Amino acid sequence: MDQLGALSAFVHAAEARSFTEAGRRLELSSSAIGKAVTRLEERLGVRLFHRSTRAITLTAEGALFLERCHRIFAELEVAERELTQAAGNPQGKLRISLPQLGMRLMPHLIAFQQAYPAVELELDFSDRLVNVIEEGFDAVMRIGEVQDSRLMMRRLNGFSHRLVATPDYLARRGEPTVPADLAAHACLHYRYPSSGKLDAWPLFAGDKYLNLDLPQTAVTNAVDPLLAMAEAGQGIACLPDFIVAEAIEQRRLVPLLDGHIRDRRTLSILWPSSRQPLPKIKAFVDFIAARLASSSS
Image (spheres, rainbow, N blue to C red):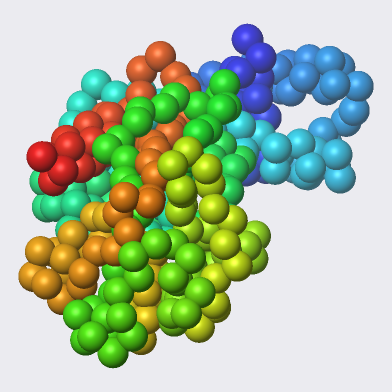
């Protein structure tokens, strides 16, 4: 009996508390089960069972080994299920980690749900740098360059930032014509929850980056409150272009200092590397990439 067969014999014997019952379940003789367990004990160098003429009971070492064996067989079951799914349609739970501004991608995520109803989405919105493999995520969206040999990557349509304010605010406070004018304005900032740092406004004079000490009229660690304050006329905000595009088109917000902003952020989907990604992961990556590409055209 091979090693996996011996483990199976041990698990069935431990659960049934009987070599005879384990043999019946595995369609083997009780003698074959007993011999397999004995060889396993000899190889491990420990006794797994206390034996009597009437019953067998686990030793302390046997109980610990049984727990480990349950984990091994659970992993095998998951592996078999994944391989079965790889030959079929996208299905099963899909754990995705997204940055907080990924909340603005909800229309695309809902569309994915509607297109693939057999996939169960579990979404985690956070700006912290999650460990994709150790935390059990199927895929993550990340902003910026990422280098991890354990992960596959597909670049999505990126985004830029724009400074915006309402026409009413500009009528009251005046429109800044050069970056230095911002010192006299109410500036609304985003703070990264993970690092506590402010997201620097990408202001330039020619090729020179301007590290300006701007007023901090309000600071938030989420994008939606920042947009709400800007649309309420509370000041000037620096927000991703895809978030303010509709408000600019409808003239609720006015873009400012476009000629002084040089900024392009990359957005990528990453997932654990393998020769054959599961259908649910491939479907998600292809779907989101296509949706973001079409929304920018």
